[in-house]
Image 1 (spheres, rainbow, N blue to C red):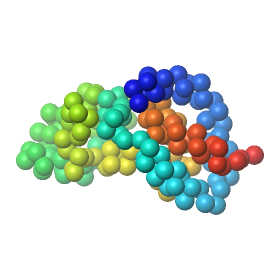
Image 2 (image 1 turned 180 degrees about the horizontal axis):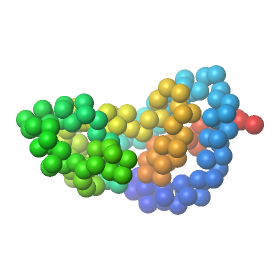
Image 3 (image 1 turned 45 degrees about the vertical axis):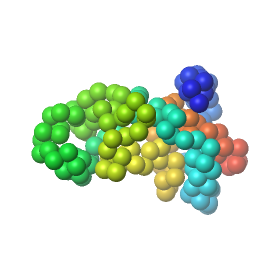
Image 4 (image 1 turned 90 degrees about the vertical axis):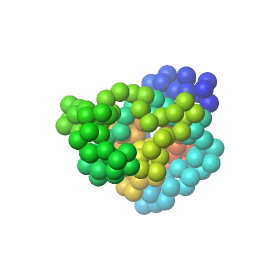
Length: 165
């Protein structure tokens, strides 16, 4: 996995234009069973890949924290939401709450998340490859291809299975 992780940025860069063109066509004419196909590819890929051997998402990027996330996690820590925000979060350029630092403060050296049961919605749904109306998140998927080996593999499998004109 480590070798693939090291190669991933270059692989993603080399395939970026191909992936981008594919997603552009996918948006225009999504196949009828796209959601079902994506769910199958997602499930199949995550049978092969164990996120605990990677955790690159937690090491390189931070999730957005919704108000519900902040409430839930601060309650978990028995903190006031304002104290949680002051301790762990900052507001980014788009006015969203994000982590002050990466890697994630809640990621352990064993790649386990110390707040897994109450983690942000964005973490629980990552890498979003099983989301309904998948074609609507192509820009997000293109970014995730660069950091998530599973996303890269899912997109490659998707391009093999779904033939677009």
